Length: 221
Image (tube, rainbow, N blue to C red; front, side, top):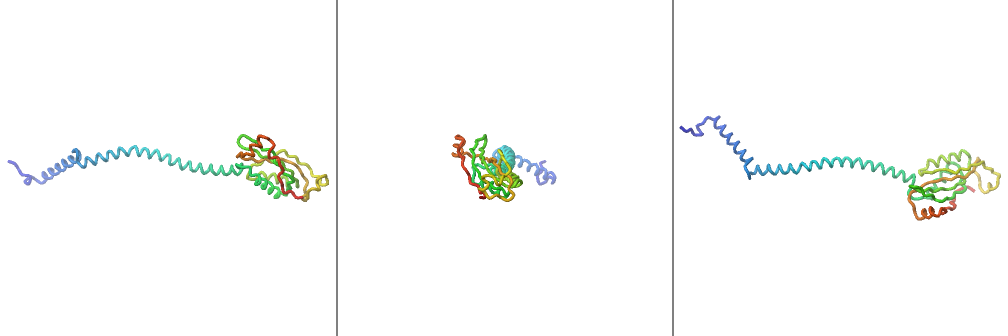
């Protein structure tokens, strides 16, 4: 004899409802053209597209970190370049260099009597610009003058030094008013450097004689 659903015990009814719910859920998940199935397909496609993008992001993070490191290196190199440009400038900057030398001489109590340019010498990566100086002063003032030259921002080499005791009663001494305590006079060559060749530099290097002119110095007379 058949029993109606309402006459069944409530546990049996609950199992029936549970089984029916499971069937409906499975039908919604796996039946073709169901909204849930369509969403699952869309999610799977999105995940498939996301995986290579995640891989690209991970690889780009390395470049992002490297970019920060490169920016720090570029900042440090820029500071080094500015320092090198002060030591070996691009242009000759003759007037500025003469002013620097004269200031060092005045601070040391040394009198520069004559300062002449010598031919510019082309070297592998830069150009050497020598000057021949005639100066006098107390012995320790001359030493202090050389020390101050070594502390200037530009590189300066001193060579061809010829120092001698000053004979204040000798010929030519009447041309200048000597600093009290002056005991030494001499000639020497100071050389500085620059990197940017201009037309004058090219002709000077080719002829070997250009630039041989006297540069006035503030010697006391």
